[in-house]
Image 1 (cartoon, rainbow, N blue to C red):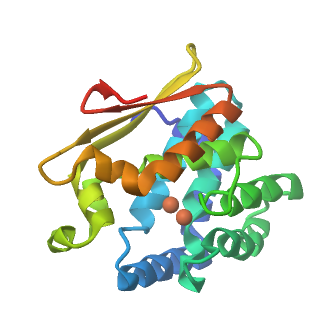
Image 2 (spheres, rainbow, N blue to C red):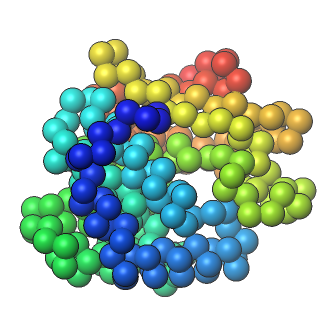
Length: 228
Ligand SMILES: [Fe+2]
Ligand SMILES: [Fe+2]
């Protein structure tokens, strides 16, 4: 899902990205998770999730204003991680409140963004509206080799191994057919398909529910083979 995002829609996303608090929070969050041995959760992940969330809603015919709220929620969703991994979704939602007010978002907008951010994690979250559903799908689609900080860790860390094995991860949204397909290309000499499900099954269930919320079926293809 690349190259089809209309730049003009995303002025507010650019303002959010450049807000000094967001820059600092995101950098601290990524640094903290790096210390704990987690995969990349910085500007790369934030930007990608922002654009995927935006495109999901655009492809499904939601207006550009709603799609932009999803983009903003996508960029901000993981900034709470430096306050602790546990409940990072809720802490992110709360610390973004003043940023969104600073940038002129109204209550009906920041409530939607905060609700989506607070509900993106599979442990505690649920899709509650189109923006939160799009954020869940976008976040869980980002499984990729480039998120692994040090390939030497893949032998002992299953998250690093599965991410490192993922050469391509693409959420294909077919608006006409009301169907979303997560297309993965995995190097099975690095990690088998079972390992993917061992760590991501709860995320895939969350994706299916989020797609259902958007009136779509959710499918998955690994190495061009339909899994479900
Ligand atoms: Fe998260
Ligand atoms: Fe995330």
